Length: 184
Image 1: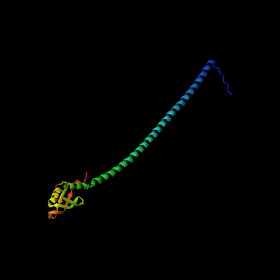
Image 2: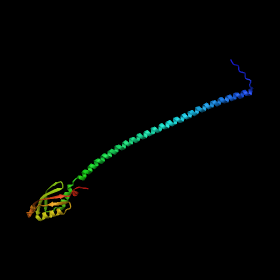
Image 3: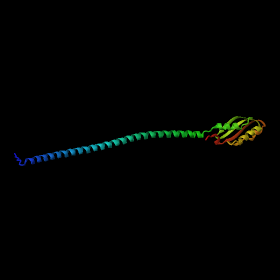
Image 4: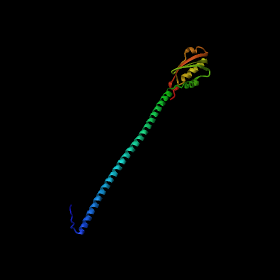
């Protein structure tokens, strides 16, 4: 066992005790400061990680909503392309459509009252008209009207149709211009 003898004066003893207490308090303050600093650093690290994860989740959400919007836009783009393709097919059919009513309107303007058309046949853009005229002059007038019409060309009236003077049964062959029976 050790025996300690304290030969210091009382003031020094108090001063040593105070210094010892001061060092203990200073040590505890340093420990508490270090613990608080570590806690603050830990909290800042957690805050950084949480913000980083929040940004990742937000970007992923934006990407998924962008992806959904992209898919929607792609769907509608495909639909528009499909509809445009169908419309172009319909337009092609409409452009290739032959409107024979235009031929009838042109014929109506050129046929004199004394000429009667009893038959009409077509092949491509060739037209064959059959009918009856009261006189040869009426038939020649009809042929002249057809020849002067800009939509008709190569009007052919065989001479055999002009043999009779009255009640003439005729057949006229002509070609109609493609532009006249197709609408643009």
